[in-house]
Image (cartoon, rainbow, N blue to C red; front, side, top):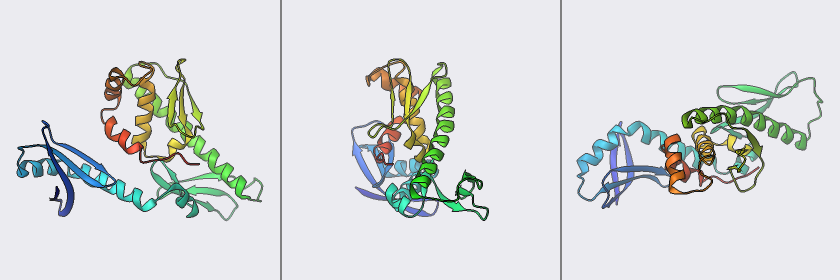
Length: 235
């Protein structure tokens, strides 16, 4: 059932689903806002809940709208844009011959001015890949340390992966592998993958016990898991 609500002066359409459940649940995906409620909950109570979640709803709808407008990673590359932690960076050559990656708030040099001035496409893509990997190592180490603390385990070793079908893995020796392409995704999805793989140190399966452990480390894992499925692994 299609319904509407006024949140901070903006009319938001949402799909309302009534079922024999006990609580009100909200999800936001590529189709928009979906509200699942118990059978007898009045509209006034639904509106009240939506008002309390207005900031979260606006944020999630904006994230999905941005993703729709960005289209695919190959399209971004055609436009000269490179995603990093959910943001966009663009290469720029300075007057002194440096190549920098520039975002709305920061910049980083990926080619010093004293290096070879000849720039082939292959060499440029090599620098981009190295830049991504440097960012990945720093970010992944920080997130592993954070979630290791939440799970009360010692720092886990990790390696960058170049897998074509998996975002991450954990072997029976306790070594975590994280796909370097994860660094292109928003931080909350990186956190979900990190938490997921660290929980395999307790349960090398996807049993109910495993998911209970994930819920301790990352309580909103179900939403993140669903969102991660909308991304594909691409170079």
